[in-house]
Image (cartoon, helix red, strand yellow):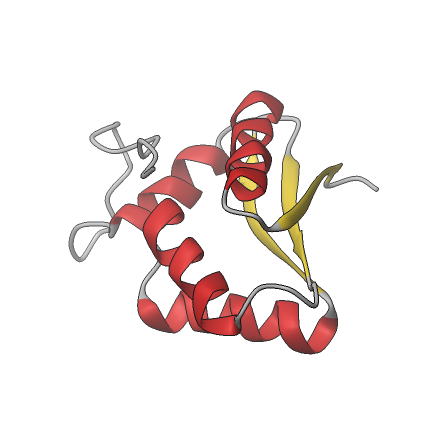
Length: 111
């Protein structure tokens, strides 16, 4: 279930030297929102690392390298922030992670 990317085509959404990837647009579109919330994915003993990487690539549109880095952070550090932005959008991300069978929570960037 891929998600729509926020911020694409908006003024100032492209860097000076080229276009944004969908993952970069996703993050940049959310960074203009305030206050900011985070979706945190937690390590669990059930899901394979390859599956977690697949979820990050398919849902968020992250590159293989970005998805792999986040998956490794979840595996080695126990958690990783996978998205940040307005509360409603991040609540959707957390629900999506639950639908994929991942453990995820919502938290304020201030906490």
